[in-house]
Image (cartoon, rainbow, N blue to C red):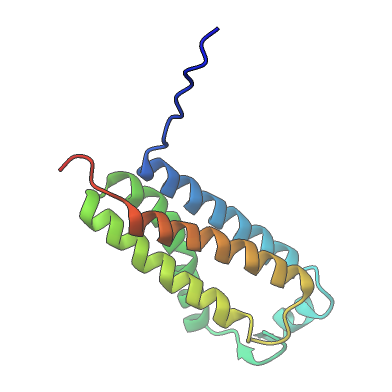
Amino acid sequence: MNTNIKTAKMDTKILLILLWVFYSVNFMYCDHLSNLEPGVLAGIMSGTVADGTVKITAGFLLGTAIMFEIPFLMIILSWVLKYRANRWANIIAGTLFVLAQIGSLFAGTPSPMYIFYSIVEIAGLSLIVWNAWKWQNVEA
């Protein structure tokens, strides 16, 4: 019986990709479930979100589309960027999304479901920032 068990360390690039996928799936499900909360669809139909505090405009939708696209882009960038650019892209994007997610908790009145998903998303994003921060370039 071989008792010399070696633990394999996951490639940081792969870990970052998986964490961005994890974050993306969570925010998509959160947004989907948010539409089922009482009053949300009525607000959307009247042209507002966040308890009527934010007006839905073409600019709002474009900004939202850009914000939603960045995590998907980070999945690709985490694979193709070289070490230094990859590390900093993940630190910057992860940090900005943590701040945005915290800020979203103050737009309207968040439901328990939204707070739960926010905690999960912030944890995932924090892992992205942490792993990118401590990432050592093994190729150098």
